Image 1: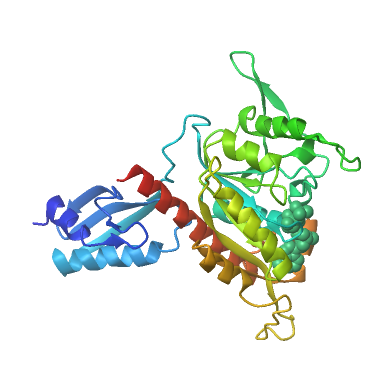
Image 2: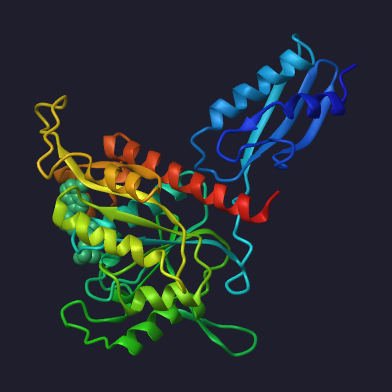
Length: 357
Ligand SMILES: Nc1ncnc2c1ncn2[C@@H]1O[C@H](COP(=O)(O)OP(=O)(O)OP(=O)(O)O)[C@@H](O)[C@H]1O
């Protein structure tokens, strides 16, 4: 007769390699059910984007067979409950706010933010995206929402809440929804900061696992306002490999480490890493230099989340209102999946460490 105690004791031998604790201590094993030689339980991961799903599932099966019964029939149901940082005084229903930032303009920050949102949502996470780029909001273009205007609803206590626009399963708000796309918006510092705060505080986001924020390039008022007004899970830094971009990226990265801001850097994404011509798919041309982003991540001791090649279809997809990761056959969808998985893992690691469970 197999017992629940035996099953849990066996699973104490399976460690989550990132969280460095066993699955039972991490409360990731739920609903153990035993019937003769059949052992069933739920493995609750800390993110649906977990890249180690299969590895952990196999390790659990092996542990039961090794420590409990070689002939046990093991059935594992995988679910996820995204963790959140402890500091959640505000915006309680939003578990993790992620800033996507770059030192320099035009390096692909909005492309990365949009594709991370699409990838996490495709994995089953509840995702929102705020386009806080006051200089050139691009979410309306990338999601095919030019001219769209969010509506509002009244709460029971008479407050008006903006309703984010939903597309591809993502809740979206952009400063671009509130401005004429052909008119320059002369946002002054405090005005822009207030407008951004409203996108967080006065919108009906509902429950979200991840709220991704596409910041303006550089380091400025908006960065400081957001960093100091809301509990931020971490920042993703986007760069291209050339020295001019890397020099600005270093400044951007250093800003998140300043006292008074102090936001964990989840990692560096290197965009436009190399070019592969469609007719020579095995060839990689490092036209902007090689490994700049990786070396920067090493130097600052932050994770390197991955590289994205330079491909024409990214721009075509963005311009047509469908981020490239929507096309699951594209090699870029795989690149973004890896990056989203590493980023989500990093958030889980930080959250579990602060909760100290
Ligand atoms: N890997 C890539 N390959 C080809 N084109 C790309 C790639 N990444 C981004 N682009 C294109 O480069 C342009 C700038 O990208 P994007 O708007 O994402 O950059 P950004 O850093 O957000 O810019 P901004 O400073 O204006 O906010 C877009 O036309 C986009 O489609």
